[in-house]
Length: 635
Image 1 (spheres, rainbow, N blue to C red):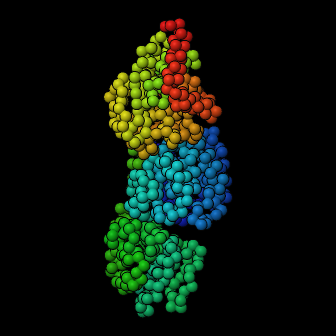
Image 2 (image 1 turned 90 degrees about the vertical axis):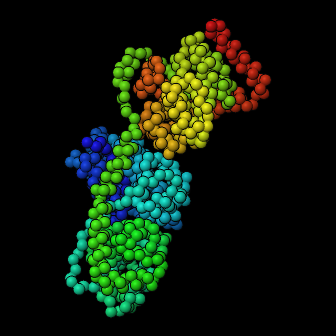
Image 3 (image 1 turned 45 degrees about the vertical axis):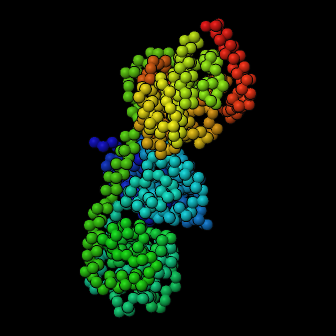
């Protein structure tokens, strides 16, 4: 049996607004719930009653988180806040109201979720708020029209911050994926929307051909459509219905007033459609209208844009005209009005397409994405027998990240490092010099004199994917290899792959995509580093380690002796890498982060490695070594 997950689907628009994104989230949620997954559907709402009931449930579920989910296995719908505005001004999306952001935070902070699936997570939106607070694996689905959304982004870096938390990205159409990849390079999996069969109103035989236009494209598309209608021969039997959310369109000329009806109910407009026209010139497309036309059993007639061609399979289930070409649009309309067998034939091909575009197919593909991501999570308890053995060992204090004067940016002699580590109460340390293992080997040789355990490590700079630490290694690993090659070399030596300060943008770090590529090979992640200037970087590391169930470690990253033990891990004593990793799994991390301490230690590092003349540094180093050895009684 396939694994069952707890999932939150987050839609950007109010439940009450009919749109393709909301339909996608709702239909996928329904399909997943029917397959045994526990599903929450979160979205803003215009209903005060739904919002009140949702808040009441959220408050109650804080004590018993399983109550978030429908006990009967259905989709739990939560209105996360009352949305009182619509649209945008000057191309800037308005920020979600505070109550929406707070409610999403409450849900995602308490509900036991495997996945948070956000739709159109452009900032600011309900999706971007969800990514801010999610501790689960995140999937982002981007629906057309991407060009409209991209044109409104004025805070690119802000958007990229949240996109950097996505573990998988999907796009509804190839054209959408291509455009997204141009602005936000990443892997976008194609996840086409399903087709919902619309309730079709059967019309009297011989009734005029009904042509429908939905005013979801740029205004020029509607003007083009109306011009084409005016050019049709007067004796043709047709009528037109224009859906307008506001119920208003440009003033109709006398020749159209008796033939064109304006409605504010899109479902009603499509219910009796024979032909559905989309006439965008490319500024604002409406692929959802074309998909709904197929669901209504109508013949789509669209401008020849990539996203429309993709839906209509390059003309198999609809007809096209070149964007802006009113003459060809007119000719295609006349052709469809006169030729009933042609309309019937195209509609039959559309019926076959509806079978292939069922929502069950979409749910299959979503489940496959979830299963692939879940498979990358680490086993939370892989060696219970080792853990039982460790339970009898004493607790020791450990620091897993530090440097000696074998690193080019550190002036701390090995003896000074060892003496200071013992003085601050550490029972074990990992010496992790930059691109060098000699300092760690020297420290291990002298460890017995000081009564401390030393793990031999190296902080290796990869070609262009940041740094990675190998623990329990014996040989120097050359810098400049790829991240995957460096990890392979650590593995060859029987070592542990430990990623330091993984999301600190002030260090050389692997980006999120590179981390995802090797997540199965990472043994541990540094979730706390006191030298991190911004606490958010450590928080990102905690978030990543938690969602993939990776063991978390910590270290002072000390480049001066005074920084040792500024963070320490309390863990059971260990022997070798396997016992170390299991002991680390249950360890406690204690630290007192302080920007003052960070500034003081950084200043000491500069004075010891940069500011002092080389002769003075050498003299200072000799005095420190002599003092350290003397302090140990000349052992």
